[in-house]
Length: 95
Image (cartoon, rainbow, N blue to C red; front, side, top):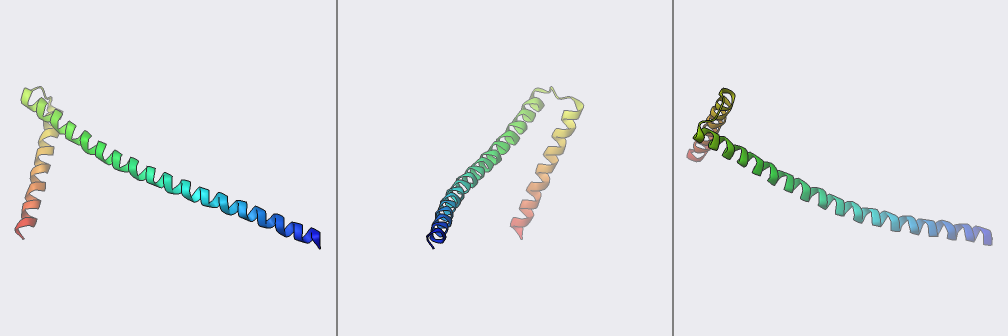
């Protein structure tokens, strides 16, 4: 009977250890999810900054007049898209 009790105690101890490891992994997972969220927000901010800088670079090139034909075409497309977006916003605000 004591060997049976020893086995039960051993299983219980292993189960307790497993539960502690599970809780530690849950905490680590939560920390990692927080880190992922922060990195994604940072990436989003950096992407917006890159877009803004690309627009500024395009404006500077346009103002200096050192754009090749492809850059002029891309710049015109971007300006036209901005105008369309502004028109959509104005239409929404007027409704």
